[in-house]
Image (tube, rainbow, N blue to C red; front, side, top):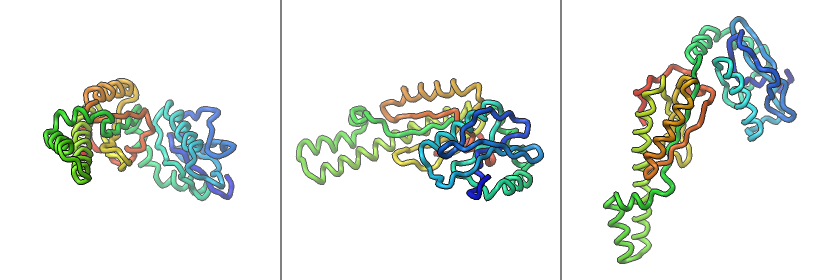
Length: 248
């Protein structure tokens, strides 16, 4: 390690195979090494002196974790996790061994799938047809155009589009939760009305994606559904929220 610290990608069991040729963050990419204490191994590299959230490094961090996860469960670290030195990593592994092993056991064979819900891009025609309030405001603008009338119409359209997309998102989350081990509400994202992650069996990830795409077609006049994954299980490192108990 260097005096810039140890960049930590994630933690695995000590017997977890680490693929050769992993590329770390930085330019040139950092040499990826391991730090083993007891039954745990941290995957690390020297922290770059000018570490920032560049696309290149974000992708390197993500790709490394995905490759690790091909051979077993991983406790992923968020981008930018830097320890003072390798000794600090060793202390953390020793102090948290039992807890980390319990989470690794819980995540074995599972991946995270994320679903985001946004207002539908081409939903205005369906909205006008189905929403009497919006239809009335539109007709009022046509009869007597004015700045205030247009403002009221725009506000009503925006609110109705958001409401319809949120309702569709809730329906989709409720449906998808039935096939997940756990669900977790994600952080707010600009333009996104629902952001939810699902913990699913790795072998079921293709089927989960296909079901999201089916729901996207069903709700296309109300919402746009975007699915991402398989992803490292960032959202499920703490105690699980059982499927069916999340509110959006």
